[in-house]
Image (cartoon, rainbow, N blue to C red; front, side, top):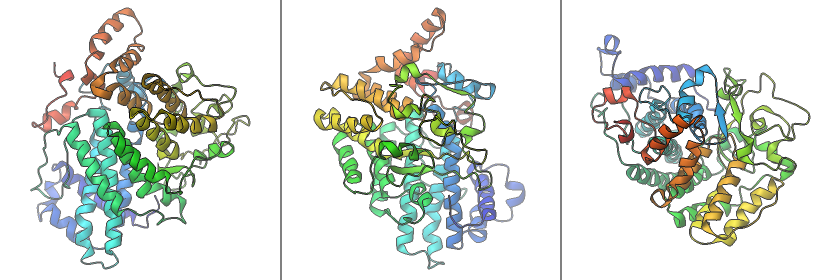
Amino acid sequence: MKISASRNKIKIFLALGACLLWNTGCNDWIDIEPENELIKQEFWKTSDDINSVIAATYDALRGTMEKSLLMGEVRADFISISGGIFGDYERIAASDISTTNGVANWSSYYNVINLANTVMHYAPIVQKEDKTLTDEVIDDIKSEMLFLRALNYFYLVRLWKDVPLVLSPTVSDTVEFYLPKSEERVVLNQIVSDLKVASALAFTDKFANDISLLKGRANKYAIQALMADVLLWSERYNECITYCDSIMNSGALGLEPSNDWFKIYYPGNSRLESIFELQYDDDFDGQENPIYVSLLNSLSVNLSYIDYDRQNDIRMSGSKGPLWKYVGTDETGLNQKKRTDNERDANFIYYRYADILFIKAEALAETGNFEEANYLVRLIAERAGVSYTPTFSLVNFRNTLLAERGREFAAEGKRWYDVLRFAKKNHFENKQLIMDMLLSKATDAQKLAVMRSKVVDTMSYYLPIHYNEIQVNKKLVQNPFYDR
């Protein structure tokens, strides 16, 4: 994230912000004046201060990446994980989930949300002192922070369903620290409302000359892509199509051609296909994607579920498998050319143009337009070098689309969220899909019987509120599946 800002300022802000966030452990040295006044006097003075915390907010998003990726895969059918440090994820994968599981913790997402809320709170205040913060700049800042808040809430509702809805920063002791959960529909409505505002304020090509900023900052297309995804999850299909069309009709984006397909991953930030990516730069303070630290040796991909056409599908990367997108530098893998030790910085892709085609295709099929839906999926399949057979019944199209999405986005942290979305359509009418997937992980008859008694409850598809959160915040009510 290339924002010109003092890293010392970021550290100062985060240290102070941590005291405010937890409201404990800081009283010994801050008794002289209220924390909110200290931060305002010592930090919030210039546009550089605002930019520092914007950078810190994107950096905090990096803190959610590993959880978002693994939670999007391990309970599904493509990715397996092993290794002592990933024991908590292994237990979640096996539906052995407790309220004390260390990774069933939402604090990293709320860290991003609090930082975004804080920037939106202070930016107009600083504008009064620093005239370089024009109204246009303030609009840009607000649109980015609303996007980041919405993105993290979208992960929260997909993982926990009902969650506290925090719309104000923890900038003083007068803020209500302990909030009850809001229902999923309330949080989703807030996300949609925020993204409408963000889309109206957002920039499109402000960073056209710097590809990492163009694809790593939340511009209008990133906001509209998230909106389309949220509306698809909410089964608001006609609205979803409208946002997809806005992106597709812009003329700014498209699919990378087959010959250039691997550019999506190496070097990344495809000017044609990428919409929003979490940026990493191994030359900047050792900032590498965490997948290289320990994940690559702990992940395995079940290709029988993916059902690739190994002979023709370019996504197999010369039979190297889907993880080659993080490891390799060439599209086929035939040269065995891997990234070097200073190239451990593949971006985490949140949205690219293929997402938009899939999202629109799904929404079209749900509204009965199979002809155009099949056409859009065919574009992606044929780009990968495989044939596509159209289908014109909703059940068959859903199965085809889910499989094709799996092949396109293997190991990109989307599979579990996709399966859950398909299963929950029309009040979980397709619950058997997710039940069969979870039951397939049972290793013996006894475990199968126990798991079958669990997965029939749709609330088991969501995580529990961590025990520590329940102990601290008495207004929280545990997910009923885990409150037995």
